[in-house]
Length: 213
Image (cartoon, helix red, strand yellow):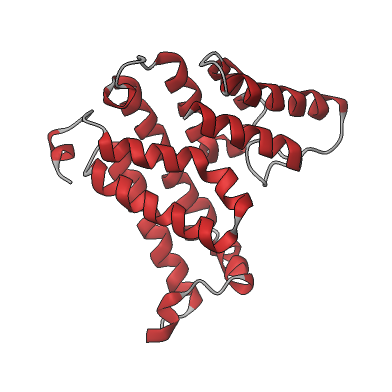
């Protein structure tokens, strides 16, 4: 996970954005310093868990209105600082990380699909991903279906329901998008791929319902 986060942050710094492409740097001195901080945090993560402090610090520069969409980064930083070295995916820290990533998916389901479907519709204009069009489902309905699927995944992660099934689904989803959108998508989603694998192998549960797979 450290390696994945390090590569993702270094790639983001080199491409000129903080954490995600919707947070572009504008060339001011402050943004230059944050960009350098992101780059060196990535380098530190490649060698040491202490890079988790850098991740937490970077989160302070994410606009508050957009922080719910990046709670996964907060979770990754706290996880690196809190999780034990032995079997970290079985720890309480992993349960907290799982919940924060669940909240991230819940937030994204509303901001990008359920409340503002125009964002996803614009994406579908460039990328013909509506595989349900073959059976007569138009783009608007497809976006709503995708939004409810993302919302369900987020709630399942938040509540600890069927974590291994969620992990397998997340791995399939992330792998598919990376294959279709290329290297830049892979660089951005490496931490989620590692997290998905962690869900599959984890024995940490926060509810009795989470024992299912």
